[in-house]
Image (tube, rainbow, N blue to C red; front, side, top):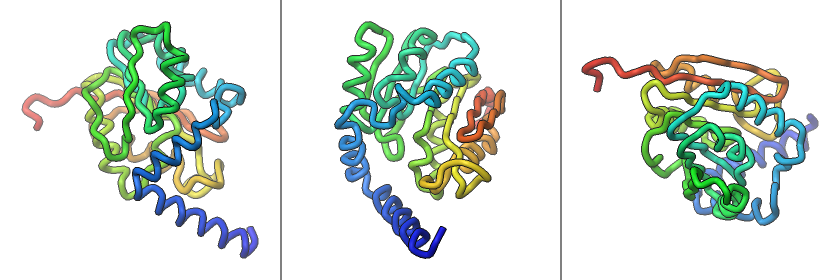
Length: 222
């Protein structure tokens, strides 16, 4: 990368950091992104389908009473998750994305939606399955400890936490250029938590999927 490219990339990273600090601006940004359907091409991109296949393979046909998908977007993954969950809650910062999710899943009475900024808003309740796909790398690294604590607290004892995020060349030896952090940084925070046990950790060329169980609380633990 030449000097001009280095300067441009640094400025872009600073801009992203400033945007992350203003949550109203972040919400407006994603509402703008979702002005058109499927802005990230997750429906038509073969890699998007591979990721969904990996997620479904990771839960191996299991059934869950209550599940939460953080950063659900337009409900593309939820179309498949809904067949394995009695009650599925989709949360996203974009109301436009959630509206399309409701339309896509209109015939699934077991699916609910709620607009939620997972960075700052509390997570409503606990769940047997929590899925977070390609959302946590929007957080600031300094917020990851608090954010992971909040998400792990939302997993019921003995429940499952499934993370899938792209790799980033800024914290890994492969991956995306435009993300400051990727799966290596994000997933490791959850792996290092004493409450989790890794059941699957699979690294592909451009992304990583990690499945963890939440250990039951010890008797008398606070």
